[in-house]
Image 1: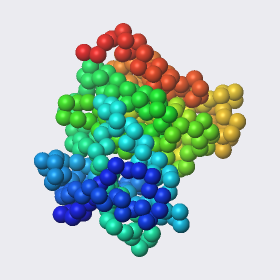
Image 2: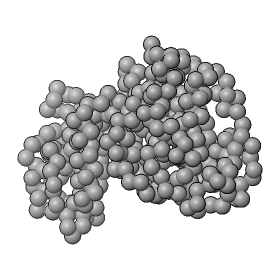
Image 3: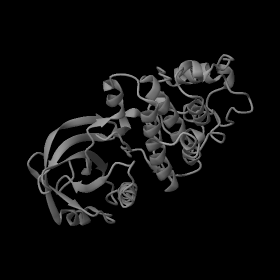
Image 4: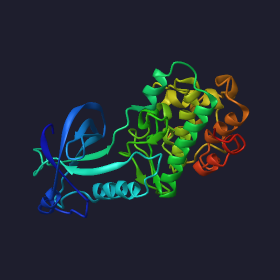
Length: 325
């Protein structure tokens, strides 16, 4: 990628390889600087846009399998979804600046290389918390919490579930704003979706996912609740070592759910777990004000139907009774 022409375009319905030539009408040059990170869904590079004043960007390289019918519709929908979100310029969603094709042909594995070009934000929440010299102020926690929930509410209002919220996928700008990033697992909302084991990093995975039950937008609220708790502890609240251990961590803190609450479709039996009594969340977060604890309890309900929605959270007294500074 370094020093080469990567062609960018406004993505349209490209259904076959013969249409791929349409991706090369607007050449731009990006100079690769270094690798920011790699994951299950691609490699992210820090790069410079040489045709736009040297602006630094983040380029996510993804490989798309080519079928007999060409580029999968799911990929085109994902790109269209990202473009649709970008049109709103939401302050808590990372900006998608471009979509680029990596070259004129597919690689030997019959995979098409695409680059998603995002605004570059210098650090993620994980590194921000590690570098913070001391506990965050309540104002800072409240402001960052509001940013995270605003981004989630925006996605959910467009019927999108992020599905992998964690500190590594939350970016912190130089001014301290938080933006949601990495929509590699985002999926338009479906009431009966089931998650595979790769979805939602273990420590932030909600019980319905761990139990193999159907899920909805409430998965993001659970994950966000654990992130909001981590703003206070600066370490993961529930650091499980496996799917089973993660459930034990959850039940040790919140108690084993009743038979009535246990999902009928769960792949794990309730009797597999000891009858853990609930512990006090206040003991885990001793400096959290009462309204913050009440918000977190509402976000970390075992039953997704009883969990607060992102909009409920934004309207919670923690934000409305103690206005943002």
